[in-house]
Length: 127
Image 1: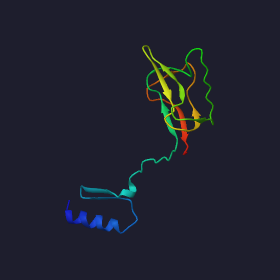
Image 2: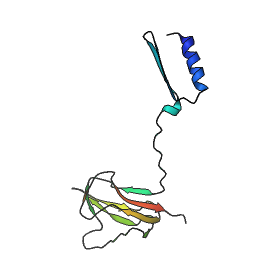
Image 3: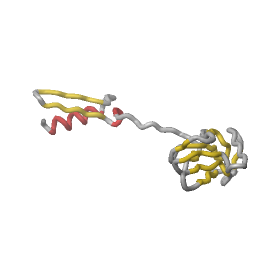
Image 4: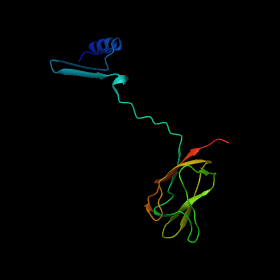
């Protein structure tokens, strides 16, 4: 295919509002897509801070004999206990990474959790 023709077509395409152009002639073909034709990745704006499971194990709200009740909407201080993930060999303490309002409690007592699974979402609050 003639490079001069390709240049002319691409220059012409810039002057139009077309996002894609296909051309075929005598077995030669060209397909041009502008950036407008490309799908844009999804953009999500989220101010919530996810608290994820540190390991594969079983989630417990508190140690045996202790009581910890977490409810959506309550204010949580940075470093406050959020529960424990118990594995075969260790108990991983979960603490709040930020001070804020507890928006989502996804963790349920006695459920198996995966590494990286979101257990809580906290809306950070400025002091």
